[in-house]
Amino acid sequence: MTLISPHIIDVKRKMEGQIRGYLLSRNSQLIFVRNFDGFSPAGYVAMPSSTVTDFVINEPWTKMIAAESHASIAQTAPWFATDSLRSALASIYEKNANIKIECEKCADSEEFGFHIGRIVAMGGSSLGFVFFDSAGRWFDSPYAIPYNSITRDY
Image 1 (tube, rainbow, N blue to C red):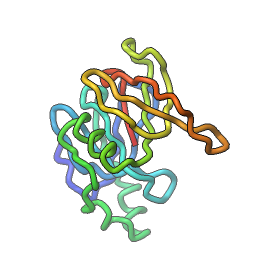
Image 2: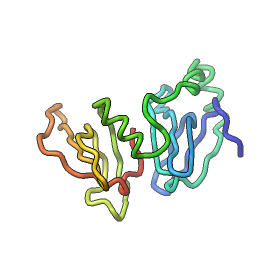
Image 3: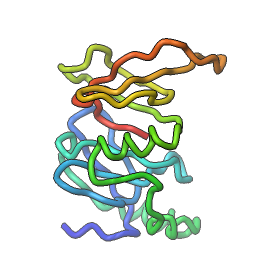
Protein backbone atom coordinates (compact mmCIF):
# COMPACT_ATOMS: atom_id res chain seq x y z
CA MET A 1 0.00 0.00 0.00
CA THR A 2 1.27 3.45 -0.86
CA LEU A 3 0.95 5.80 2.07
CA ILE A 4 1.09 9.36 0.83
CA SER A 5 0.40 12.43 2.93
CA PRO A 6 -2.04 13.93 3.53
CA HIS A 7 -3.76 10.60 4.23
CA ILE A 8 -4.58 10.01 7.88
CA ILE A 9 -3.45 6.52 8.82
CA ASP A 10 -4.15 4.20 11.70
CA VAL A 11 -0.93 2.58 12.87
CA LYS A 12 -1.64 -0.88 14.26
CA ARG A 13 0.85 -2.01 16.88
CA LYS A 14 1.87 -5.12 18.80
CA MET A 15 0.93 -3.29 21.99
CA GLU A 16 -2.56 -2.19 22.93
CA GLY A 17 -4.01 0.78 21.13
CA GLN A 18 -3.25 2.35 17.82
CA ILE A 19 -1.92 5.71 16.72
CA ARG A 20 -3.74 7.93 14.25
CA GLY A 21 -2.16 10.70 12.24
CA TYR A 22 -0.03 11.67 9.26
CA LEU A 23 2.89 9.39 8.46
CA LEU A 24 5.90 11.73 8.26
CA SER A 25 8.76 9.31 7.94
CA ARG A 26 9.50 5.61 8.14
CA ASN A 27 12.55 3.42 7.75
CA SER A 28 13.69 0.01 8.96
CA GLN A 29 14.28 1.38 12.47
CA LEU A 30 11.73 4.08 13.16
CA ILE A 31 8.30 5.41 12.26
CA PHE A 32 7.26 9.04 12.85
CA VAL A 33 3.63 10.14 12.89
CA ARG A 34 2.07 13.58 13.38
CA ASN A 35 -0.47 12.41 15.94
CA PHE A 36 -4.08 13.54 16.26
CA ASP A 37 -5.83 13.40 19.62
CA GLY A 38 -9.47 14.17 19.12
CA PHE A 39 -9.73 16.62 16.26
CA SER A 40 -6.51 18.55 16.63
CA PRO A 41 -2.79 17.87 16.18
CA ALA A 42 -1.24 16.47 19.36
CA GLY A 43 2.45 16.45 18.55
CA TYR A 44 4.74 13.81 17.13
CA VAL A 45 5.01 10.12 17.95
CA ALA A 46 8.14 8.09 17.24
CA MET A 47 8.09 4.32 17.57
CA PRO A 48 10.42 1.48 16.66
CA SER A 49 9.39 -0.12 13.37
CA SER A 50 9.49 -3.51 15.09
CA THR A 51 6.43 -2.54 17.19
CA VAL A 52 4.22 -1.81 14.14
CA THR A 53 2.13 -4.54 12.52
CA ASP A 54 0.14 -2.63 9.88
CA PHE A 55 -0.88 0.74 8.42
CA VAL A 56 -4.46 1.43 7.35
CA ILE A 57 -5.56 4.56 5.50
CA ASN A 58 -8.47 6.12 7.36
CA GLU A 59 -10.53 7.87 4.66
CA PRO A 60 -13.22 9.32 6.98
CA TRP A 61 -10.57 10.94 9.20
CA THR A 62 -8.59 12.12 6.18
CA LYS A 63 -11.65 13.98 4.87
CA MET A 64 -12.61 15.32 8.29
CA ILE A 65 -9.12 16.65 9.15
CA ALA A 66 -8.82 18.21 5.68
CA ALA A 67 -12.18 19.93 6.21
CA GLU A 68 -10.82 21.30 9.51
CA SER A 69 -7.87 22.83 7.55
CA HIS A 70 -5.20 20.71 9.24
CA ALA A 71 -3.95 18.92 6.10
CA SER A 72 -1.08 21.40 5.66
CA ILE A 73 0.67 20.09 8.79
CA ALA A 74 1.23 16.79 6.98
CA GLN A 75 4.09 18.57 5.19
CA THR A 76 5.62 20.05 8.35
CA ALA A 77 8.83 18.25 9.26
CA PRO A 78 9.65 17.60 12.92
CA TRP A 79 12.29 19.83 14.49
CA PHE A 80 14.28 16.76 15.59
CA ALA A 81 16.18 14.03 13.75
CA THR A 82 14.05 11.20 12.36
CA ASP A 83 16.56 8.62 11.14
CA SER A 84 16.79 6.58 14.36
CA LEU A 85 15.40 6.54 17.89
CA ARG A 86 18.74 7.52 19.39
CA SER A 87 19.22 10.45 17.01
CA ALA A 88 15.67 11.66 17.74
CA LEU A 89 16.29 11.39 21.49
CA ALA A 90 19.67 13.12 21.11
CA SER A 91 17.99 16.03 19.28
CA ILE A 92 15.42 16.35 22.05
CA TYR A 93 18.17 16.14 24.69
CA GLU A 94 20.18 18.91 22.97
CA LYS A 95 17.13 21.21 22.97
CA ASN A 96 16.45 20.41 26.65
CA ALA A 97 12.81 19.76 25.71
CA ASN A 98 10.26 17.83 27.72
CA ILE A 99 9.21 14.45 26.38
CA LYS A 100 6.85 11.57 27.07
CA ILE A 101 8.39 8.10 26.81
CA GLU A 102 6.48 4.85 27.00
CA CYS A 103 7.86 1.41 27.82
CA GLU A 104 4.87 -0.79 27.15
CA LYS A 105 5.18 -4.33 28.47
CA CYS A 106 8.78 -4.79 27.34
CA ALA A 107 10.64 -7.69 28.92
CA ASP A 108 13.86 -5.63 28.97
CA SER A 109 12.34 -2.74 30.90
CA GLU A 110 13.01 -2.43 34.62
CA GLU A 111 10.09 -0.06 34.95
CA PHE A 112 7.08 -0.39 32.70
CA GLY A 113 4.89 2.51 31.88
CA PHE A 114 4.70 6.13 31.15
CA HIS A 115 7.52 8.61 31.76
CA ILE A 116 7.14 12.36 31.35
CA GLY A 117 10.00 14.72 31.93
CA ARG A 118 13.41 15.51 30.45
CA ILE A 119 16.44 13.62 29.22
CA VAL A 120 19.50 14.64 31.26
CA ALA A 121 22.09 12.21 29.88
CA MET A 122 22.63 9.96 26.86
CA GLY A 123 24.52 6.75 27.64
CA GLY A 124 25.56 3.71 25.66
CA SER A 125 22.56 1.51 26.50
CA SER A 126 20.22 3.87 28.34
CA LEU A 127 19.32 7.49 28.85
CA GLY A 128 19.21 9.42 32.10
CA PHE A 129 15.75 10.82 32.78
CA VAL A 130 14.22 13.14 35.37
CA PHE A 131 10.52 13.66 35.84
CA PHE A 132 8.17 15.96 37.66
CA ASP A 133 5.22 15.24 39.91
CA SER A 134 1.60 16.34 39.54
CA ALA A 135 2.43 19.66 41.25
CA GLY A 136 5.15 20.40 38.69
CA ARG A 137 8.09 19.78 41.07
CA TRP A 138 11.13 18.26 39.35
CA PHE A 139 12.84 15.31 41.03
CA ASP A 140 16.58 15.70 41.60
CA SER A 141 17.74 12.18 40.89
CA PRO A 142 17.70 10.86 37.34
CA TYR A 143 16.92 7.23 36.60
CA ALA A 144 17.88 5.08 33.62
CA ILE A 145 15.54 4.10 30.79
CA PRO A 146 17.11 1.43 28.55
CA TYR A 147 16.82 2.31 24.85
CA ASN A 148 15.57 -1.19 24.04
CA SER A 149 12.61 -0.78 26.42
CA ILE A 150 11.22 2.33 24.66
CA THR A 151 8.19 1.57 22.53
CA ARG A 152 7.19 5.13 21.71
CA ASP A 153 8.01 8.72 22.57
CA TYR A 154 6.30 12.06 22.09
